[in-house]
Length: 421
Figure 1: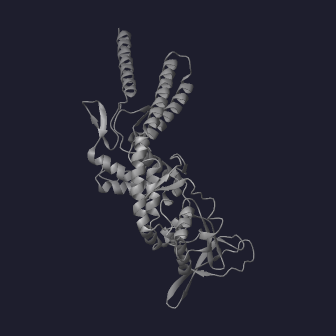
Figure 2: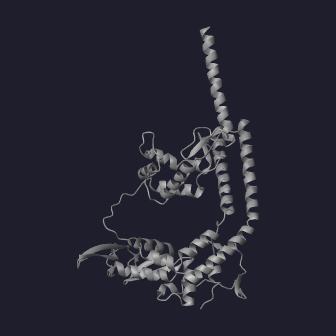
Figure 3: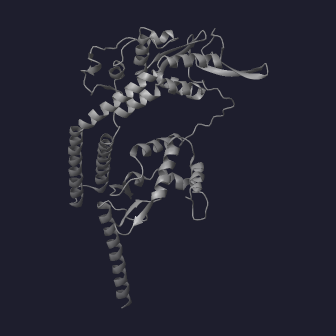
């Protein structure tokens, strides 16, 4: 009798466990969260799913944004969250391991990871996929940090090469006349080099002068932004075909997923192959959903990058960044290539689309004091305005909107709208 009782107890326990697993599988197929809500969410008993907690969700989003910008480490981010009331049960800042799990939790972008499988969640995500990927990139960069000691602040180190021997330009300081002066010189790594020193302020003035050759006039900036708004409306009207194609692809991927699940349930493929194929299809589906979301939202695709380029190239923005030497270096690295220092003179080629801006400003006579390299034949060629024709008081483009460079609408289309003065 005792064996029968034990057998019945074992059967009841196994049956209860199987029913629980079956219930979890059903919830996952419906996209419902199967357990306790992660940080930033709350369980909704009515819908049997999770939903963003109004206050905590905003704190989580802000934490991801600040971490992606490099403002905090795992430890300091825990202290930052403690300031908003997100802390452990012992009223201490969250541990680094907890912060690490939070920053890598795909639940915040609408995915459910259960075991080795990933499911599509049927709840509102807190983060955009772009922000989540930016945080993953930052975590990867900090996985093996480079331990270096900075004893002095030399903002332009690593920016230039020597125009004579090709070595890097390094820096050193000297004391005199009651102050500390910083100088830049060739490392002379490749042997003898006759290049002289150059003071930091003199170097900064030359870099600032170079940036002025690509700074867009304020009146141009205002007109360009208005034109971008018109193009944005046109692009929104022409997006229906693109969205329909994405929906067709999504439908095809979903059919493949359904077929894969049916094949696995029928026992025709191994579990390892099933998991591998499913993960690939889920990633493909998420990629298509991301493209659809980006394209459908306002000010996406090529419009927003073009608007950002116009704003970042405005005279006011350039002047503001020139005041901070570290920001000045970042801008020069962004817009310039082949950066050399020869005979105390900076030489640099402009990359697209700033090369075209330098040409247009040079023709208008606006870029006074521009450097010779800004108007060199190599920089001021290969530009074609034949596709831009004037119609009355407005300029109309006959080229296709699909002609873009690096995801941004060709700047010649908008710059050529402004007549050379």
